[in-house]
Length: 301
Image (cartoon, rainbow, N blue to C red; front, side, top):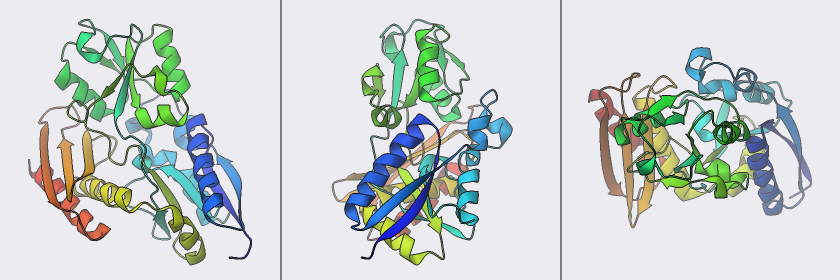
């Protein structure tokens, strides 16, 4: 192809920059003649660190200003953690690429080095995720679950300084920052079902930019796309938001797609789970139908 220069929009946090730059390097390697510029954006979610997300507008606040950069032409595409992307996109935008996923599981970081089962009664665990709080209370109802905000370094420092006995983070984030060794324990999906899309990126561009879409699609991973599409369909079906403890996790199990889901009330009550398996779908639309069906089952409860 002829030389092409594109601008990517990214949040300014260390984790966002690490994953955006890794994607950029891979894309430039895959597309001869492509060069990328970087537009760093501070989002509303980054600016407000002293209140829970559900009190200031939800996870969409981590992508709002990035999408504005796409819509006003300052950027050609944006790199998101897809778990931050709402089920419904602006009509002029689309997800052009979901690359291969990093490990989607949650990681526990404790000050003492003790795993979850060995933490003392009353230990203080920091998380602002309602999903994680539900999982922790189900596993250890004797623990104190308290809200915590801030970037990965800030949260790790709060454990080291004794503000918390432990925190729960996405293992993918620790890996992308080279901090995987800080994890005391990787929580199995049976203990903490991962967030919808956790560990995966969503690369967003304008609908009208077919050429940009085609470039980005070079790094799309078919298996990850199917799995994340199924998970996001669960979120849409239950009308999930940051006020809803909801999880969905899809994997390829041999020749099958295995989808597990969890839903509870905002206060953690009425916890229900469900799962389904189908033959590995031929396309993402079939995966979406599975997610819609599982989501409807969870919502019906």
